[in-house]
Image (cartoon, rainbow, N blue to C red; front, side):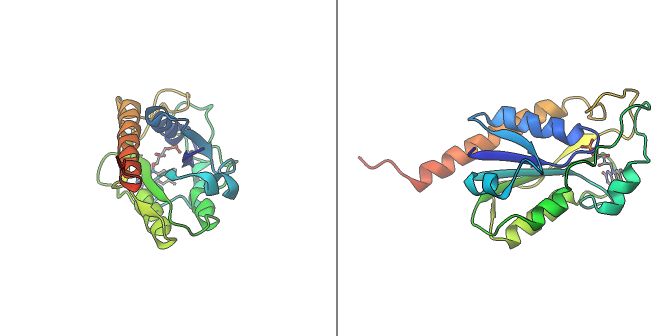
Length: 184
Ligand SMILES: Cc1cc2nc3c(=O)[nH]c(=O)nc-3n(C[C@H](O)[C@H](O)[C@H](O)COP(=O)(O)O)c2cc1C
């Protein structure tokens, strides 16, 4: 697994974006929950694409995840999934290395601040990893009439995520070509 998309997602919206990015990237890229993206999986990856929902203008915390369990953003029936470790905890276990990465987040459009992707970027950069792109935000609505996972995503966001994945694949291909230039 050369490219791994790792995500946290309580209602499935960030998960849908992560899967769309992996689809767009192609080349065997996979989207994994934090517990599947073990240190040995990370060690084999050349590119990490890491995403989380914005909670209180930052990465989710234990407290915000607990408070999310009592929130209903759609019709009753879809409960916050806190069965996987948070990205915040997952980042604590990422070994230092010089690996390339890109960060993304899902958040509400409007005046609320977005800081989850920025926090991912700070942490990975501090560990020696190199960002290949600016952090990207994908937008959700505050409420939905549906109890389906990913129902909060506003129209066109999954398509944008596929395009971003394609773009990241292009950036990586250019980086590889630079690392091993063809010598006649
Ligand atoms: C406790 C809590 C705090 C939130 N704070 C913010 C915020 O500061 N800014 C924002 O844009 N969205 C905020 N949101 C909305 C989340 O970003 C939204 O629920 C998330 O993108 C849905 O993704 P998921 O289905 O993958 O969990 C908050 C949500 C919760 C539950």
